Structure formats: C-alpha cells, structure tokens
Image 1 (cartoon, helix red, strand yellow):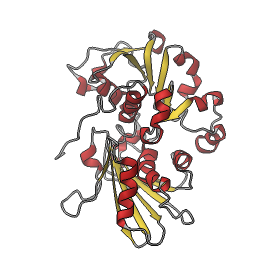
Image 2 (tube, rainbow, N blue to C red):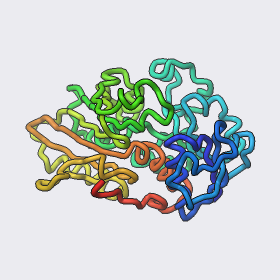
Image 3 (cartoon, helix red, strand yellow):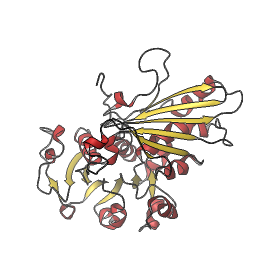
Length: 340
C-alpha cells in the first residue's frame, strides 16, 4: 500500500516515517515539509540514516496515494481537508482538528470556530481499544491526544464495567516529557528554563479534557505537569469505587476488557524496581502500561505511555492496521529498551 505523510518534519511525523519505513505492508511515497523542500529527511531525522533516501516535498507536489497521514499543527487539516481528501481515499490525522464530535467544543477548548463541522462525524476517534469496529469501516480517523490517551485507557474499563462511583470526582494528573511541546523552540523550552523543571503548566483547563469527557462520558478533573523527561507520560488518577469492591474485581474489569489487547499491559508487581508503570522503559514502544492500588473505596490508577508512540504515531499506525485489515502489530513490535 502506498502512503504519504503531510508534515513529516516534526516529532510526530518523524515517528510516523520511522515506523512506516519498517512496515511490511507499506511503501512510503512522499513526505512533506514546506521549510525543507528538497532536503533529505535524514537532515531532521538522523536516526533514519541508511534507512531511506527520501527528500522532503511540498504539499503542491503530492501524488495520489492509498492513504494519507497528516501531522500538521492544529487547524491546518480542517482548513485544507478538501485538498487532502482529493489525494487519498483514506486519511489519518494526528492533530486535534477532528477529535471532538461537537463543533461548539472547539470554541470552548481551542478558542476557534471549526471550519468543517460537516466532517466531524466522518472521523473515528483514534483509540483502537475503544473504536476498533468503527475503524474497520472508516475512511477517516483522528489521532487521539497523548494526555487524553494516557488517561482514557486506564479509566475506560472501570467505567464500562460500572466500577466507578460517579457521585464522587475523578481526578487525574499527568507528568509530561518535553517532546509534547513539538520541535518549535519557545521560551519555555529554552534549555536553562526547561532543564530540571517540575512545572505545573496546566493545573486546569487542559484541552485534552474535552476528549476524556467525550470518550468516558464523565467529568474529569485533570492537571498537567512538565518534568525532566523528553518522551513519555505518566498519569496518576484518583477515583472511588463502590463499597465492597475488591482488588480481584479490578483485575477482572481489566482482564475482561483488555485481555486480548496487543498493546495494553497490566503492571502490578509485588517486588522489583518496576512494580508500577514507568514511561522510561516504554520509549519507542506502542504499549500502554496500567497499574492500580486499592485502599478501601479509594482507587489509584497509574498509566504510562510514550507520547510520540501510543500517544501519536504508534497509535496512528495501529489504527491504520485495523482500517486496512493488516495484522494489528505490524510495524509496532519494538519492545522498548532497558536499561536506558
């Protein structure tokens, strides 16, 4: 199958390219970057040296392909949707442009008027674990946000199985790596300001809350904190369960929903250094590790992902595999590194 990537100069686009070059069912045809047209992709993605001779193209140079990945800044895909849809029958967009079903939510959470509200219902939200069957019939898929993914996946089975006491608040906090901010430098990413920081950059009002509440059907109180890490997200969620709920009940909820999921691992060990999920050992992998601790009716759930993989490019490849009836693990079998 022939695919191209629009916006391949960023971190998400670079991860897409790395994964697609190793995919057994895919040929990467073109990659775009308006700033680096004609330059080799290895100029920005040096890890791909000897892996490809591709050079960046302009969007205007794109040929028609079987599937188009778009990894542009927010609002760009919605503004050029007709142009992109003329280039491929299938599109997977990594931005936030088509994640939300309610056009009014874009005004609330992103401060913009959505330019293509008529297309919102055409896109399937990008968590494969929640929307596998819809993806099998889909032409368009929207990637899910990294913090949203790291929050939704550990909580969804608990809501689905009715384990959550919804009369009490659900509170989640994410510790986030610097690559979430993309590859465009800012004052906040300047090394003397970013290095060593533990910065609460979004105590309330994070945009990904819109996705969490859309998918979980319940209010979520969410905060985000930047820490000294390049790749990765660790979410710690606090919630309450019904009186009499046991640890065995929580295990059962996860096993019933995620027992056959290829990229979900329940991590709850009694001994060792890695008793709970840890983003460090997930770098480059597409896993979401989930752990929990129950104390009476209080349940603490911990999840970890690589934000550029399970939170972006890896999840998009997984969605493509489902959409195109490939093996779900094609191109995604890297297990991570240890030690690192």
